[in-house]
Length: 338
DNA sequence: TATGTCACG
DNA sequence: ACGTACGTGACATAC
Image 1 (tube, rainbow, N blue to C red):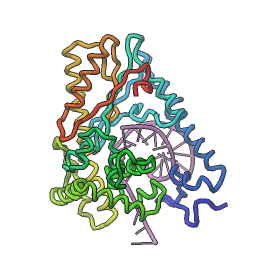
Image 2 (image 1 turned 30 degrees about the vertical axis):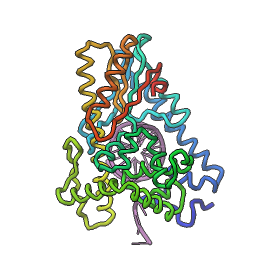
Image 3 (image 1 turned 135 degrees about the horizontal axis):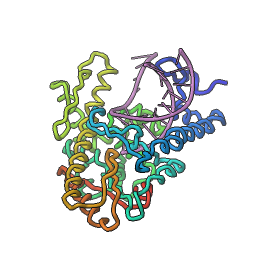
Image 4 (image 1 turned 135 degrees about the vertical axis):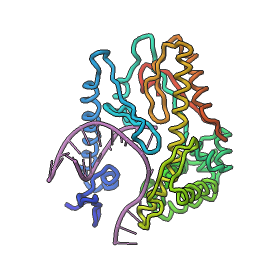
C-alpha cells in the first residue's frame, strides 16, 4: 500500500523518509502511523534516558557528572556530553517523569531553575533597533500576542489563539531565516498565506528585516559575522555561486550573532554568579547550564539571597535597549523548579 | 563508520 | 525542478 502521496520524500541516500514531521502529515492515511510514532517516542525515552542515565551515576558520590564542552558549538554555546544533560525531556508527559528524577543533594536543598525569557528575540530587538519590537518588550507585553496584533492588525486583547500561535511560529522562524515554504509546512497553511504573514511581519518590524540584510551584507564584506561581544563566525559559503549553499550561509549569518550573543550573556552571568557565591561563602552550587537556563542546588537558608543574586546578575549581565527578564522557581525536582 | 531519527534550547 | 529553519548529542541500524 502506497502512503505519503505520489512522490514520497526520500533522504539524500534514497531511503524513504519516515521522520516525525513526514509521518504526522500522513497520519490519516493509515491507522498504524500513530502507533509507530508512539512506539518511537517511547523507545527514545527508554533507550536514551531510562535505561542509560542510571549507568552514568558515579559510584563515588551517587551523582551524575556531565562534561561541558567550550569549543564545539560554532556559535559559542556550550555543549554537554557523556551524558548530555542539555536534552533532558520536558515536552511530553512521560518525558516529564524523567525530569522529575533530577533532585537536590539532600533534604536541606532545593533545585533553583532560572531562565531567560525570550532572550534571542530581545537580542534581535536590541541589535536591530526595531522600534515596534523594542516597545513591546519595554511594555512587558506577551511578545507573541503583540506580534500577532501588529501582523494581523488587531488590538492585542482581541488576538485569537490561532493568531498568537501563528505569530509565535513567525517569531521562532525569524531567528533562523525561515521562509514561506518552511512556515507553511510548520503551520499547515498554503504557501501564499504564509508569505502574506511574513510580508506583514516585515512591514510592521522593518528593523528586523534591516538587521537580516545588514548581517548578510557585513558577512559578504568581511567573511564573518560577530556577536555583541566580538565572537566571530567565519562563513566562506556566503559568496558561493550555489544558491542553496549560499542561502544556508545567509541563514547562519542571521542566526549566529543572536544565538552567540545569548551564549556570551549567560557565560558572563555564570562567571559573576560564581564569584559572588564564593565571596559570600554560600553552600549552594551551580549545577547545570542549558543554553538560557541555570540550575542550582540551593541551600534552604540561602533561597532568598541566591534568588536575588541570580536574578540581578543574569538580568544585568549585558545591558540592552530592552530589559532582560529572568523567571525563576525553586522545587523539589527539576520539573517542579522549571 | 555513516545514516536517520529525535531529545533539548 | 530543486531545496527550503539555527545549534547540539545519543541511540539503533545497516554496511
